[in-house]
Length: 338
Length: 108
Ligand SMILES: Cc1cc2nc3c(=O)[nH]c(=O)nc-3n(C[C@H](O)[C@H](O)[C@H](O)COP(=O)(O)OP(=O)(O)OC[C@H]3O[C@@H](n4cnc5c(N)ncnc54)[C@H](O)[C@@H]3O)c2cc1C
Ligand code: FES
Image (cartoon, rainbow over all chains, first blue to last red; front, side, top):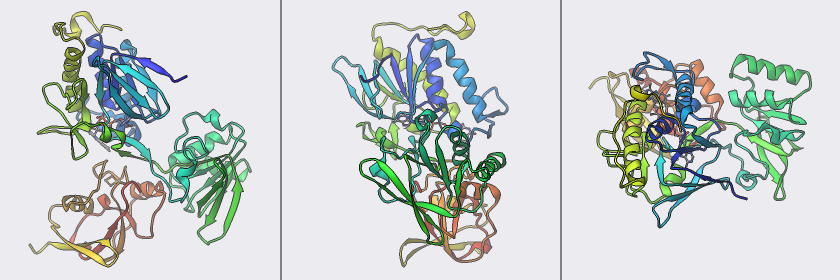
């Protein structure tokens, strides 16, 4: 059974701008469902710079990117937005009645009255190692670029590749879940957070995990499902080991992705919008934040917030062409709930 | 200007494009490459946080050693080369005259 969700506005992208759009929509009593390809909300702030201070958010002389995301999530709680995380929106269709249907990579279907694309620089896609037949084992056949549900690996034999924080953190975590964990790293040392690197070393010394340094996973083998990998050392020696899952963790990088194929007018990988209400070339579809472009566009969080407010006015008019809206300050009645 | 230097970008084997760059503006190699029309995302704007400005230094003057932030970021990449650097961390000075680089494929 496909998972079907019904809402007023489907927001593509859970970056700061997509999150704040939930608030602005909520003030107009519009419900939102938010989809993001990443397993956590926050977009660039969570994925690239959670620990960096931001200095140009009005009212906050200084705030850590990660804290801003936490605050945004708290701020939109009264509106009970729903989320689909870890799934990318692949395609969408406009129906005869002016409503929309969106479909994700994992078969989730979202029915909505308007679409707000807040896709930032695109969806974050994994950096893939140079292994020839990697793609052959994607999509549930043994290769994973993210750990969405650690339980998936319970009592399984896994090989993790990478030398950064996420490779170290997941090695430590999965050591207690999987039957057998091997960490392959092309370097000789780990530069990631000292305590997680130390923990990996301790686990390896205790024989709880296997650590293979100065090596790369170079070949995948299996018939329809991953069965073995070849690990080749920088000195040329190769070893083939059996496994159930291969998890290369080399960070993520944003790519425009499917948004570029939705038939919307684009300039330089950004969606052209009308600054009246940030509507795109397709009525009922809006674009806000880093993903849009217009004369004078600045890719700033501040500007995205403003765009979200005006976009919601446009979406309201699109959904209820006959209703009149009068602006109410949040100070008058507090934040309404949905 | 006297302070201008030459940088070479190897676009294909044996094919190098010369770029004249000023050194009095505190520019990084990433900024100059971007301004010269190369498709570099530089998502993080030069904070050594995204590695989308990854280049391979092929020849030229000896550069200063990468700092910890740069090494940390390079460490996360699936493929690096002996000359791998983050171009946003290379400040252009008269000492960097004659640098030869190759851009890493996008997304790598
Ligand atoms: C290092 C760094 C420092 C910065 N400093 C500042 C600063 O000081 N001040 C400031 O104002 N701005 C700063 N910025 C810019 C700021 O982060 C962006 O303007 C902001 O993140 C844009 O928010 P957004 O919601 O539009 O997009 P993003 O934050 O990029 O979020 C977009 C989300 O959409 C998702 N997505 C895309 N396509 C799909 C799809 N098809 N299906 C599902 N999900 C999808 C992505 O996975 C992503 O999570 C900085 C950026 C970086 C990288
Ligand atoms: S621009 Fe992001 S690391 Fe250089």
